[in-house]
Image (tube, rainbow, N blue to C red):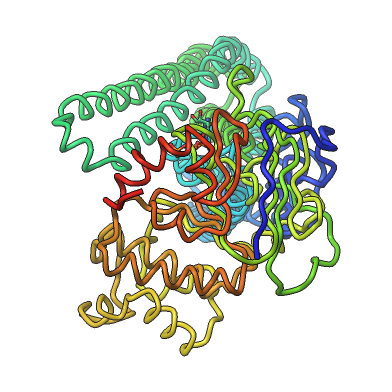
Length: 625
Ligand SMILES: Nc1ncnc2c1ncn2[C@@H]1O[C@H](COP(=O)(O)OP(=O)(O)OP(=O)(O)O)[C@@H](O)[C@H]1O
């Protein structure tokens, strides 16, 4: 039987110290997938590695294949590098009345070989890029699943989605057009300059003066492009968040006639994304065109100086032609460098946004060790527990003390905002209490391995969500290995068999999003069946107020009473029938336990309880007190 000792803001041996168990974090290891329960170091304070180091850490595991891909496309480009030289030989052959066939055949062979090598190199690079994206997504999703609840409370789902989808895609761009392209471009640039030097040093000097001068101007634009890129990615995230807000409350938006306002809000976010995208385009176009212009100016300068040198006989015409061809060839590596640089900026912005999520605090994994009393019902004790969701002026728990012995049913009641649901959130360790002690099964909650703790508890939320999938998947969600007989038994006990019979594919019918829509009562019964299949040692039940009809309510009450004979049930009661059947009732008020006792005792002794019983609880069931 259950006993509850409630005191008003009681004292007790509190343990207000900081949590001592280990937290999961990946900020320090961007290329290491998370072992679900491996203890990890705390996330560093904000002086972590730079985005470039983070990016290189992601690329490092692929460096072998990237070097191969880079060398192949470099070989392809280098084949092209020999073409102006071949052209010179062809012109010389014409001038000397020799046959130009040999240089022309060599030229064609070079073009073909270069194209094949480049194509294979590009394919390798693109494939590696996809690998990096996949790895980043795996890590990020794994990380999100293990984030602390308060960290997720502060994030917007749409923005989070854009980090997983579009920001990770940008990593691929940075790999191919950023790192490899830049590296190849530098080598090609050096190669071209070497050939140009071989042709004529004076013309090379003229070319470099023009290009380096204009290049310096372009370099000044780079920080602007970097900032614009980051803002553009942030605004895409904000647009996702705005759209997500509508989709999360789609019916409410329609019922409130707020379609136009919400459309305008999403459109405003889209406009922002557009404006910032245009800003990136503006600065990128300026830098691209400036660099291209430098080639054209260099061409004119070389034509002028080179023409004069040909006229004076100090330069062969074929050398001038070859030099001009190299000059245009220079466009490739210079364009590659500019593109590589802008690609790198978007990649760095993406890495920064991905890292922001990865360095959020991970859930505590708890201490490894044995679990108290395998399989038996768990007792629970709160001693002087204090907890706030962040606002220090209004803590949700101001010193909550109560005990629940093993087995039986204990009801939590109290006015709205008294802190009832917070009791459940602390027991599930969605949040860590600030002070006092919570023990489950006689063991400090912080000393439980988190997986074992949650594995021992079943939590039925008041507005239990149905996940998109089949009814069977939903029922087996918390106990995927439960055998078919137990599934059938849980379905029958929660009176879901009539629903199953009605559905076109029975248990295998799709429910939730893009499937059959279920009523609130059906969702609640699915949640209870899910809890039954989990065979919990502690059942946390946030009772619904009006979702169940009288027949189902009676049936479910019987199921819960049967369960209470085998396990510990802690219920946030909204119905008079529930508190009547509870072994003890704990009355919470403004973050403290006001009193505790049986229904009859509390009716006789406590004004607040009497008022709750006659108003809130009776209203939910229409029962006389
Ligand atoms: N995730 C949260 N972030 C910030 N504050 C919260 C959060 N959840 C609850 N609170 C606040 O904590 C206090 C206690 O909330 P709690 O949900 O525990 O009350 P409750 O007794 O279950 O109320 P109700 O019966 O209305 O569900 C309230 O002031 C509430 O606004």
